[in-house]
Image (cartoon, rainbow, N blue to C red; front, top):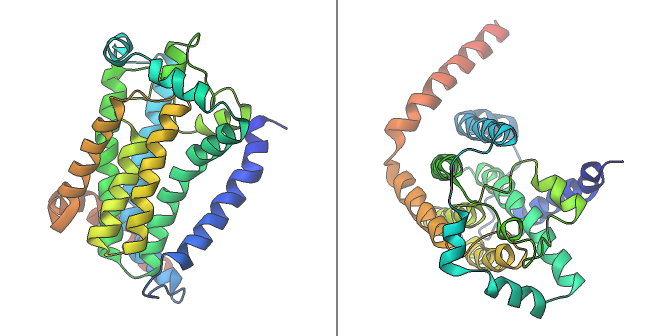
Length: 282
């Protein structure tokens, strides 16, 4: 059995359990309803189409990276600005297998949970306007993330200085194989693990009005910052860049600011799928 298959034996059940727990714990005003789920998913198809496009572009970017990583080689500049002494100190201070595995599982499973749980949760609560903002904000995030990945070739800290920084995440076959499904070791600047959960947190707290999810989200972001430094993944400079992306993604998709752009994608898709559905029924 390959490391990826072994990893999936705990990753998929863990993800499903977390989503199930989250649906009930974060539903503070008890608006979740499982009735008419098919109609809800149909109504949300435009947003899901946007997410599908985003992940399609992400896979194209990964394919290109596997052939020849593009972008200007600027990791040396990041190293010259901040060095790696702080990472070495952190890894030596917290040299404990339990912390390593807990941080790795958090990194591998955490963002996947946040991205999978949030749209499902909003749909079940009939908050379709917030669901659509989530989809649009995710797309805005990846516009900047993909631009950064294509233009700037920034290696993760443990790959740039392997003699100093331990690759605590990448040295584990199961963790590494799961991460490789979406990330490459030069997908570093800005930090998507910072920008995406912060964007979701802002939407959950200030668009959806969910206090518990907002508090959880900010704690999640803080833990993520620690994790991505400790595991030998990100440079410190990646984090403020990720925060800036998140703030812009939230602002640009709030109050319908970007509807004029996304409607050009979703409305034709919705009309086309409606015609297909009508033709099938007829």
